[in-house]
Amino acid sequence: MASFASFVEISRYNLIPLSVTSLCGCPCRLLSNKTLIPTRRTPKLKLNFVFHGSKSVFRVRPTSIYVNRRFITAVARAEPESIDESNAEEEVDQGAVLPTTKDSFSELQHKSSQLRKRIVFGLGIGISVGGAVLAGGRVFTVALAAAVFLGAREYFELVRSCGITAGMTPPPRYVSRVCSVICAFMPILTLYFGNIDISVTSAAFVVATALLMQRGNPRFAQLSSTMFGLFYCGYLPCFWVKLRCGLAAPALNSRIGAGWPFLLGGQAHWTVGLVATLISFSSIIAADTYAFLGGKAIGKTPLTNISPKKTWEGAIVGLGGCIATSVVLSKIFSWPASLVSAIAFGFLNFFGSVFGDLTESMIKRDAGVKDSGSLIPGHGGILDRVDSYIFTGALAYSFVKILLPLYGV
Image 1 (tube, helix red, strand yellow):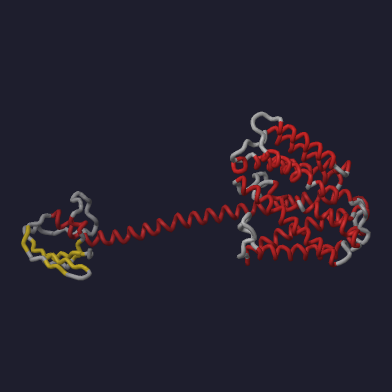
Image 2: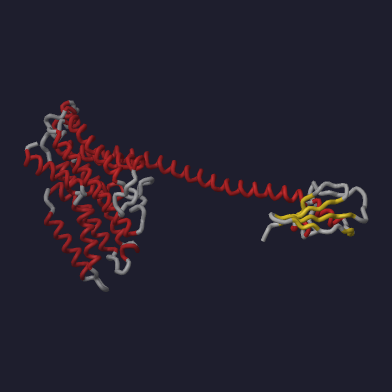
């Protein structure tokens, strides 16, 4: 239907656009400041109505009618209404823009606050971990045991979440707590006994027996998730104790060790285990940082469906950063001696960090959560921070203990 408008011609007045709403408007509405009010009473007015549309014009035969003040008010108010409508549209547009701007500003403030927390707590954690690594011995082992306990608690809470336990009975809570305590004791037993294979096997047997004897209907998923928890959260981190505290041969060629204060242990304090742990930790941090920056800058190709934000481009940049860090630190610490060994060590660290990161991402995805916990502000849970280190310790220890002596590099 073609749209139409109307005009009213009033004697001695200009042509005024008239809308249908103005004619049908409520007569009790208040007059605007632009309302036309005659100065003298006019008993009769001569009106000409002209309706025009996009294609045709309809003319109405002039006629004489009596109008009162109410009709004149409606006619004269037509133009101010059109002005008010345009102003209303502008106000609506402004109203639509202001909340969006406010929301964007609030989101920007939230991201800025999260970034500050992430930096502050990241620096605090880095300094604390660095001090524990340098101290070694009981300090390093107790710190690792505390992290293992917290990580195990988070893991078993994820296992008990609705996303993973859908269709099955979750493991009893007392089993989860007992497993967390067992995981925490594993690094300590490793420090004093070196080999804990028998202890781990015995603990796994006891836990499996408890699961099989529980009330209800035991499921294989309960057994497998619990056994994996003992291996993932307890056994694998013990390789860091073996690497840092077990490899006590001095790094004689280390330049830093030569000038290390005697009160802090002197040159004997700088062992192969300490140097390897520092290089490994630094390489993992470099891998995560360069992979994040590379993915933000040039990342386009998804690495895997497990973690859609990770890209091949970011992984390649992270690999380069990890290897470069390993090579640079090998020159500073004069270990390992050859360039090939430093590159291989960097590659193993990168592979272990990516594998651990993706494994934890898979667990969180099945659990239906973004973070493993909320222990560390700006970072999430403890598993979110240590996932890259879980598998790397075993690879780094195997490299130093087996590959280097085997090939003599």
